[in-house]
Image 1: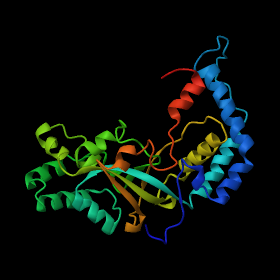
Image 2 (image 1 turned 180 degrees about the vertical axis):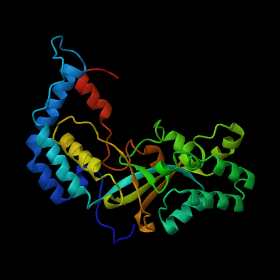
Image 3 (image 1 turned 120 degrees about the vertical axis):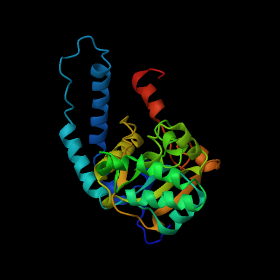
Length: 286
């Protein structure tokens, strides 16, 4: 990693929070606990419908105004910070080498065309296959504006078998090249191309539109550390400008121990307690 990058925050690990963030969070411990505890009680009594005499309207949380003001403050503070984020994909060894050399490029019709042409040149597939994949890309639909000029990631580490990321790693090309291809003859060879990868990226939130959900996740993580039971507040995010090679923290490849343990015991310090917290909250097994 580039030594000039600022300290990196893992939004799921209090141990990575800097002293300024901790000062604000600690000064609001009572508020965070009160809001979370009240929200839990509303969930149990109203949302789960266990109280036969529940009111017609969902009760308001009396701590909501102060809590949302805290989230706004955390939004402003997180906007100046850098977090670790995770990109799930399928890449060839040559593409990993290029990623390490030139950094993160945004997904655009032009970058897709360059990737396709590079694989044709290396013998990955034929020019005809490349042209068909390019023609069938969502970039050539009403989704172009929504997908172009972005590089998507996840805020929390997810296991490689998570249903949300499996499609991104099963076939080369992801959402802009292969996920929506319905021709089996066209898509099948893409499952043999490259390997599934999980990429860790130092992501300055100033390059995204996601400082608010990052602040919400930080508050949730702190709340959990204090014994409260807020939701994990995981979120998807994208950068809207390229990142240098120094932003690349790690590449985990299918078959490696770190790839297999991602979201379970890796990264160090990550514990996904959603299932346990749900059982604690509801008394149910699922």
